[in-house]
Length: 289
Image (cartoon, rainbow, N blue to C red):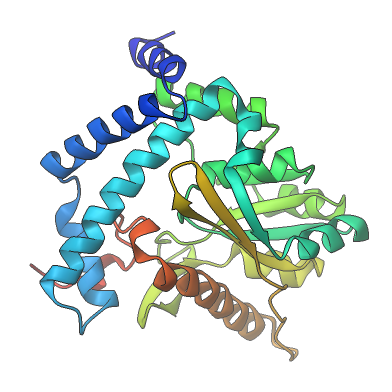
């Protein structure tokens, strides 16, 4: 076990709802506010997505992002000790009947989400509620972080598929009644993604959710976590996205990918301070600063 994982485990043993988590989140928030990681990228993203906004709005939103990440880390570490806590932390659920309908149908479902709210908490909640979720993930390069996250996901019951897995594995999982979780809000390469609008600007987007939905007929359910306060969350499940009509498969995938982006965009615009603005969602379309 590396020193980073040892340190994470030690902090996890310390972290718990109450003054301990508040102290940890306060320290992390202070550190982020001082170091301001990827500030330039985040502010450029915000300027692109909100062209009529002023600097005060963008700086305020970025401070909220740093504060959100600090609390998310404190919550994640507290969950390391007892993953079942997620059930009591989620105090409001809207639309769970759509998940239940998909589960009872036994035909599989695609969980469309993004880096919104506490997405690791969302995964833990889904598994603890009995949904057979397998998430498509890209593991961290750092071995200690990779092992820590993998151990946590194993304990909450979350299975994973690497992003490099072929589509056949995902199709088989869905056809056996599994739920496939896809975080579809990061920049895809030109060879992997489709240039569809997101927040009003073209953004190369992974088409996996749309392709798998059309291929298997499984419903695509937008599912998002929102923090209402520390250790208090709301989960919202939207109705299945309507599948576009027509016979041209490429056009249908393009149309459905756009609908996936619109679902994520709606969640982001409702609580912009809880989305991960720090990554380059629009690639080279970012304005210079």
